[in-house]
Length: 352
Image (tube, rainbow, N blue to C red; front, side, top):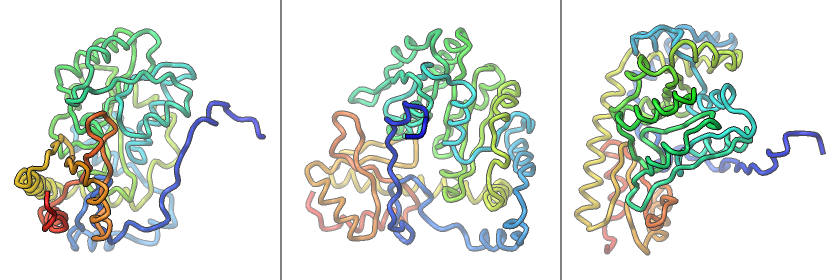
């Protein structure tokens, strides 16, 4: 056996399914579920040249676009390959073997994986059966051994949100121990609350964003971090030679230039949310709305049969929530009414 970090032996990773998800109604991973406008593709194709494939990526234009968007300087940013790379870079900078990392439980799966890969002591803060986060425990576990706090806000898979007031209390307590706090805002857009305005008052705050959700570029793996320059200058030392690929840069910059594309999708998705919530209400199905682009519907003992029905119809959904009391729920990603109607039509005729 080749010598390696012994704790990595306990990390289990699954490979992706060899079967394609393309062409299905994908309501399982909270992606954009309808196509981009055709003229958006035409604009990208018009801009694309062979150089985008043969030359190394030129990323400074995207830094400038993000600086304009947030009215900050380029030095406040680090572009990353999606939110998961943003989280990993925070582990790179802040977390030592045996150090404590405060996390929500459950949360984005890569958080727990990085805790294992970096041999961190995971301090998990959970939810009760009403999906109320134990904020008192979160406050109490922050201490001299804490090296990083990670809060997805809204959180996935719970879809819950921590208020600005409570975030401020967490930041103040963490600052007392010189602990950085990463707020992952992957679902910003679907949720309008943001911690970005708090950056000026908290030198220990880091905010991560992604182009995968509201922007709809999940296949291109583009994200970024925002923080005060003292932190971003340190994080920049861990960036790869080129942060993201040329096509991802091109598409992200095009969307920054045309915010109406994103705003239109957000509006249409909210309409889709209301459509499916009305369907669940009319059918007497218990449901859980969220602050993100997904909801949960309780199908009771019919859950597996409903999943099979969706599968046969070419509709992909995700199983329940790993919290007691939510075992019979299905998670359904949201999209415009056309997509939600396709989902509800599959259920027409089912006797609930």
